[in-house]
Each structure stands twice: as C-alpha cells, then as structure tokens.
Length: 261
Image: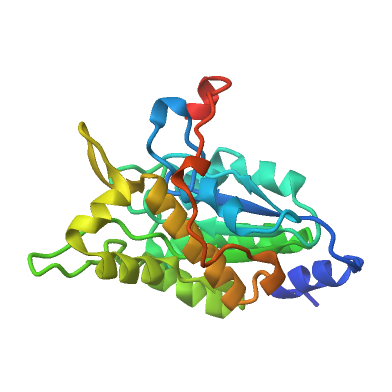
C-alpha cells in the first residue's frame, strides 16, 4: 500500500520526540525583498523581517533567509530551501511569504502560475518543514502601496493570495493573511501617510519596499496574527501595543557581495 504525502509528513511528525519546558525555538523566514535583511548601502530600505524580533520574546529567535528578488521557485532552485532544511529543528517554525516575484511572467526563472506551479513549489516548503518535525506557516504577500483616484487601497497580487489561502486550507497549515491585513492598514493610513511607511526618499518613490516605520508596522501585523492564529503562544509575543523606536532598526555592513544578491 502506498502512502500519501500527508501520511508521510504526519508519520515524520509523530516520530519526533516531544520536548518539555520552554526551550528556545527558531522562526525561519523564507521570502523576498519585502522581508529580507538590508545592509548599509540599502538604507533606509527595511525588510519587515528585520523588525520582527522586536515583537518576540528572547526564547524565539528569527533566522531571516529572505532574499531580494526571489520567488517560491527561484528560492528552491538556488538551493536556499535546502539550507534552511539542513538547519531547522523539531519544534521550529518555517514562515513562507512569496508572490511578488512569482508574478513576473517574463522571467521563466521566477514565474509561477498561481493555481498550479505556485502551489506546487509552496508544497515543497510545507513537506520539507514537516519531514523535519518543524511547523510550516504560510503568509500571504504583503501589499504594495497602490490607490485609485478615490483613495481606495488596491490589491496588486492577483490570484496568488487566494491560491495560498486555498493551499493552506487544503494542507491544514496555519495561514497569516498579511495581504488582507496590510491592505486594510494602507486603507486606514491613506494616500499621503503611507508614503512614510514605504521607501519614499528624495531620490526614489518605491511603493513596494519599506522604510523603518513600514517594516515595524508589518512586523507587528505578523506577530499579532501569529498570536491570534496560535502559531505562537501569547507569551511568545511582546510589545504589540508599544511604540517601537525606528532607531532600533540598524543596517549592518555587508560582509561580502553575496549578501547583496
């Protein structure tokens, strides 16, 4: 009798010994430039993954593997998922956020189709985490800053969020609906105030990537939704109602050219 993927994954989880107490855990991020670590040459651009540790207790560490320009496909094809799976431990979390670059139809190295290849690649992350006793978490892509002439915040990711929501339900995986939450936040802030949250500078008007206030705001959404969905225990999440100083954001020097790729 052959086993289904789900049976294999559940069997792997069942084989993992339970650990008592409040041991340290690591939350791994697989994603794109909206979440990625930025370096001094890129400041003030800030990935939300840089701000996420401000909202987590010390026993939950963040390993931010998100990289500029990657899609669910190219992240796998470049071996980046393998790196995470080689390090991840039972009880850890793998948070997966892609779509911005999956949408690039002209680039076959990154493009995926929402209802087929996008879901197929996402399953690799789910199965990989489960097979190692870790918990996969899907996060719909954070929204870009786009408004219509009447000041209504517009969705920009097509069918990708819906495809991820459907996959999460099918696979019974926790979902952080960052797309819906961020769209509501941009609507509440409005056309002008959202400029403070995105990477708008004297020389650039970037409606995709964040400045420190935007990264902090999105990280707060991720942390709050992680607690609401029980991805994290209430004790794991801190400072949700606190003002986080933007001075807490720092941009290290890149150690080599590969940090910027």
